[in-house]
Length: 363
Image (cartoon, helix red, strand yellow):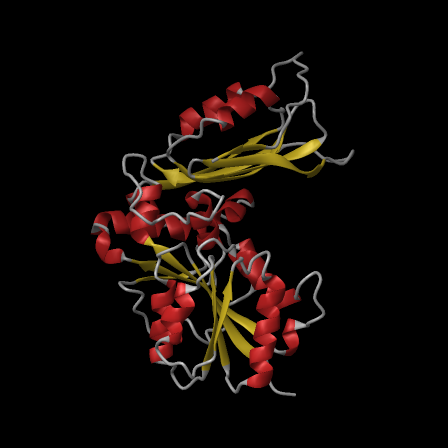
């Protein structure tokens, strides 16, 4: 049996520079024969046309009118297998659309699809998850005083851009801080400090026009599902595994900080909902779970910038010690004020509020 073909998945928002990176790889394949699958939302897959224009003989598959992290999962795996059976190549490069979540795409190559009968591990081995981050768009999105650059948001995406950005940073092995020439050096240092706080395991590379040695995104052997999931910044802080530094860290230098809020007293559901409906502008990421009075549900909370979601993620068992545990990561966070505000949301002795109708979503 031949060895599985290694796979690199490239994620990033619309206009971040994913196709430019793919073109760089195709121009310098470092001894590999690389096949490409491109997923672009829309009737005409412009990205695939740009890639295919380089060499019509290359193995390029175009998946349009859907997203490979959900509706086109079966198509992704079927086309990947077809390529493997019909063409001679020894590396597969997948460019996801600007709205694809990286985790479901990774799982396609690890576990297959729910309705499909293809075992992806017979053909492929997931090797590297790459995120191309539009540094300029990231700066604008998380700076309340700035406006987004034209074209930075994906018009077909119902999710807020901040949520797409944060999730793509949290689940990757290699992160390209692209368009770094469009951001002042001091701001770029702050962006790098933030992304390292969100995903400290990733290799972070500053790029312009996605120019990078292809060897840093091909056949790296970096992918480890458990490790990349466990190393997400909010999980590390929730587990008490935050950074320890001698002297001032880069994060501290740029005003990036984090803290964990814990409480055994339950939140008053209506006061909590009102507080979540007006998120603090300094928070880039907040995530965790809450003990809410009047409900047997564990309330999960996820905030990325101004986008907030809150809803049941399970139920407390009879023997559970019910506790709130929320991680906050941001810039210039006023920790004392935020803690005081959260304390005010807790139920006072004798309060017995009715359950609030979560889920709550605020774009």
